[in-house]
Structures are given as structure tokens and as C-alpha cells.
Image 1 (cartoon, one colour):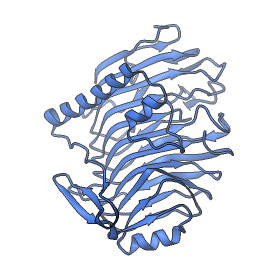
Image 2 (cartoon, one colour):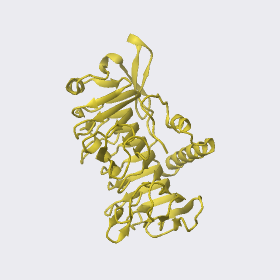
Image 3 (cartoon, helix red, strand yellow):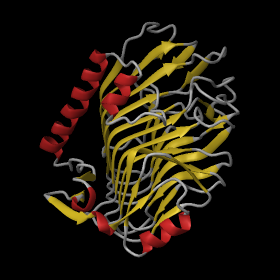
Image 4 (cartoon, one colour):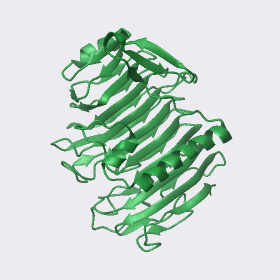
Length: 384
């Protein structure tokens, strides 16, 4: 799949997919799959339904920044927010945030010389027209310190010319307010494709905040555009979750060079996950999780995790930009423990030589160019 571009305002993930040619049938199937999974999660497991995104309503002095809560809406006047345009110094932004302002980012590309630091609970950062943040000196674009009610929405974060250890860092290991979680919503990441020089970021999103909610996040290492190649746009991992009781809805992570997602927090859940493995590993030896494990799983639940639930998760094989025959030992990897469970997961081979040798932990499949050798999903309905 393809990411949004700077020059267009895209109102939703559905609009974005339609704009770049995703067939209507696939769109409808995926949307129904996601909504159905949400309903089942709520009815069967008591899971949280993601909050509505912060929005600006009205005009001029009558405008309100609506801050949704789990139940009801809290209205904060636009005067409680700092309206930022391209060229506003990051120091001025950080001071405004520390003094209790929320942040509304006008459309545009923001080249950042230092990270935007959120130091206060209940802060809102809302991008209009998908404001694009690009760190220039190897920092994160945004660092969120509190584990308490911070809301980020409507942003694109691009990798810059100097490697960033993480593009967005949310929270810190430790206690968090379960009744007022941090929210990362409608935030897209891009490693290459848009910038005019090689770029890199080790991790796109690092979520340390327990009880946080990830809703509609798309992390993309570019497969086309400017300066795209195995050694030109480097990105190891799209998402790392260390916080406990984190919930992700509508998560897409594509083309990263190592583990696409690493989840090490307890009590987590993911409802809908879409992945494409990298198109371009130059050889099998360049793409191995260990000397004895071919490839990298798209979704890794780390050893030591005792509880996790995954619903409606798929990984696609499209080795279209390499001549190598590549094998991935498993599309998903997790501890073999009763509390770590997956429901309705699958892999699909699309193109290229090789593929997934199994769906999860050696079970299911293979899903390769020779078996089945056709573009059709191979499912594991439940695991273990």
C-alpha cells in the first residue's frame, strides 16, 4: 500500500486508500473486518473502543477544540491552544506546551531542529491537513513524557537526513492512568519516498505508555519515491510497544528491514493488523533474525509476555524489488503460553521467489511462490 503525500489533504484512511487505487471491494472488506473485530472485542472481551479524535469546530473566536473523553466531550476554547505555522521555533512551541497550551498545527512541512516535548498531562496536539514533521538532526519529532491523557492526532512524521533512534516516543515505563490513557490516533510515519536525500530512523513509534491506545497508525518504509533502496531509506522497526495493557486498532506497518512490530508489554491487544514484508532484501543473509532463523516475523510478541490477544492480522509477501529467493521462517512469532492468543491470522504470497515457511511458530502454511503459488490467503483461525 502507498502512503499519503504532502500536497493533499486526506480526511481518513479510507480516503487515502481510495486516492491511491485500492479496490473498493478490498476497502469494504477491510473496513467491515475491522469494525466486526471491534464489535466482537467489545462484546466478548470487554475491550475498550477507541476514542473519537480531537476536532476543531466553529470559526474564529467561537471555535472550540473538542477533547473527546471515554464518555462525553470536554470543550476547551481555542484560546487555550497555540496555533502553530511552519517556521514557529520549536523552543516557542515547547514553552507554550509547558505553560499549559494545547497545540494546533497548520498544514505544512515542519523541519525540526529539536524535538517537540510534551511535558504536561492532558495535552492535545492536533494536526490540520496532516501537518508533516521532519526531524533534521537525529532526534525524535515528538517526545511525550506523561502517561496521562496526552492526545496526538492528524500527523505525518517523516524520517530526516540524520538517523533518529525513534521518530515518536510516547510515555515512560511505569505506572499510568488507566482511566485517562495516552492516545495516538491518525498518525502516519514515512521512511523515505518524500525527502530528496537518503533518510533513516531505527524505530518509527516507541510506545512505553501503559494503557495507551493506538488507533489508525500507518508506519511505512518507502518502496517507491525518492532515494529508495535497502541502503538508502533505512528503518529497522515500525512499532515497539513496551507498555502494559496497550490496545491497537487499525494498525498497518510495512516494509521495515527487521521486526515490523515488537510487542513486549503485558496484557496488550491488537485488532486489525496489515503488513507487507520488505520488497527489497538483497539476499537471505542480509535478512535474518538470527544465524538459524530466516527472515523476520512481521509481528513479534517477545518472550516473557504472558498475556496478549490478536484479532484479524495479516502479512503479505511481495519480494518485487530483489532477485534473491527469500524465506521468512514465520509471519508471526510469539511465546507458546496459553495467555498469548491469536484469532483469524493469515499470510498471502503476492510475488517474488520464496515466502513464509509458516504462519506462526511453525504452524500453518507454507505460503510461498511454490506453495500455494497463487495469490490467496492461508489462514490460522486460532493459535494456540
